[in-house]
Length: 359
Ligand SMILES: *Cc1c(COP(=O)(O)O)cnc(C)c1O
Image 1 (tube, rainbow, N blue to C red):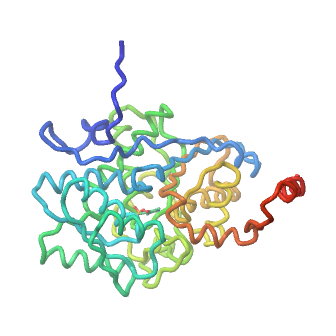
Image 2: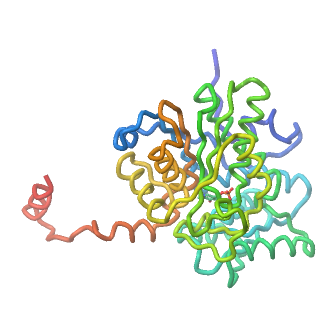
């Protein structure tokens, strides 16, 4: 009789493929194993014969895919004797670093751009008790400072330039192949620092090399139009977008991501903020899936490339939804201004009328 053991996290599940040993103490919050949801209504709505799946990473312990990398980065930092971690962040990395630091009993320092981090992410980071350093500058400036200060203080950087972040994050590709039985035809995701697209490609490539997958996907990376260095072909100094998680002009995994594009025969493209928000709303209103704005960039890009015929029909597409919609309540509420609820008297007649008026 098979005994179902409790799911304890992605390091344990994929330990044979991760840089851990029998004596490594795993720092885990039960991350990974996120739902791969097949879209039921959107393909029909846009009149395209495609299977679109979304990997809903917003259901990780702190609400974003960053937890996949953080569980391993913090595990390895602790194994190496580190007492403190540091990161620059647009919000999700700081929330994740803060939580895993608590779990490990070490300290977390996070540099965030003042006024440019979504409310939910700030609330999390405050609650987990990280040392928050707000800077008068953007993510790219924070990242440069973090790299410099790490030379002068005993802190481990847990941004995606930490190779263990990429190792942890590659497990998302393993989960997709394990579930679908093979790699999809296309894998689409939002690109900021481009650590995640690099990680997925690494995961797919390892499974392909070991003949667990029969093919590798075409990797499509989508950026916000105001923050699209990979589309421009050079760094952007003043990135702007409503999708704050990808408001990054100097991507850290620049060369690695160009390799992914070349090897997978994929591409980078951009979507406007309006397209991003429209895709976010579509996922909520037609599929019941609430992701944060940056996450919806993957679907926005797919819709654009399906309409141009660049992504072919009769194919299987996976979009990574990187973070939970609850991360950014302000943007969600602002978007729904025109459908704000009306207030009525608290009696049966008024409620009955309100319902019948809507039917
Ligand atoms: C970090 C993040 C991204 C970007 O990932 P990169 O690895 O920096 O390309 C996209 N969406 C969300 C929600 C994120 O938190």
